[in-house]
Amino acid sequence: MWKIVGLAGLAGVTATGVIIARNHRQRTQRTPEEIHAKLRERIAAAQDAA
Image 1 (cartoon, rainbow, N blue to C red):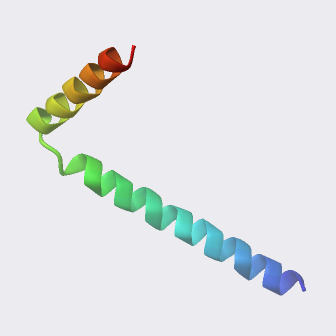
Image 2 (cartoon, rainbow, N blue to C red):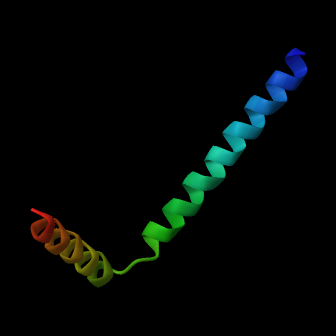
Image 3 (cartoon, rainbow, N blue to C red):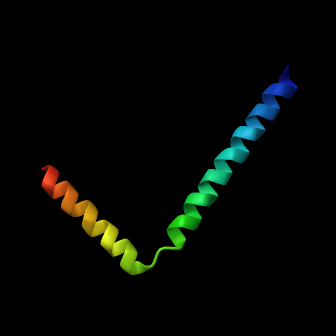
């Protein structure tokens, strides 16, 4: 029983690590200009909503 719980926990930790690594790669591949443009879009959307 505990072996199954341990394996499920290990799989969960591994999956979480994969997701974090993927998100980190996506963030680091953006240029500063892309980041500025995205922030400006978010600000404009927030101002339109308010």
